[in-house]
Length: 62
Image (cartoon, rainbow, N blue to C red; front, top):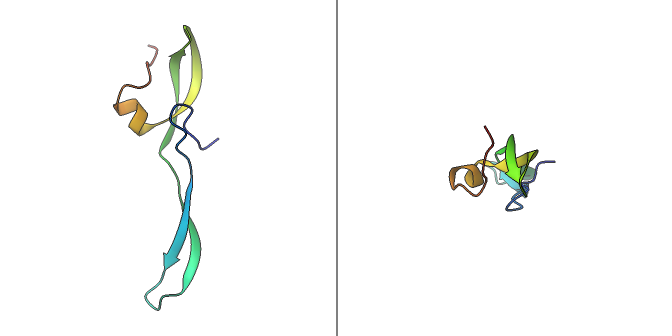
């Protein structure tokens, strides 16, 4: 679910690095919102990242 339906942005994995340089796994989650949008002429609920919302790649329904 945590993936943008328009650009495909999702979870990114990496490492936490402590002061003593011990490493543990971590993840960065994309800022995903569930919005009503016009998709192919009909209104649907879609999961969209906030970057796509700000850049007007998604036409929101009112």
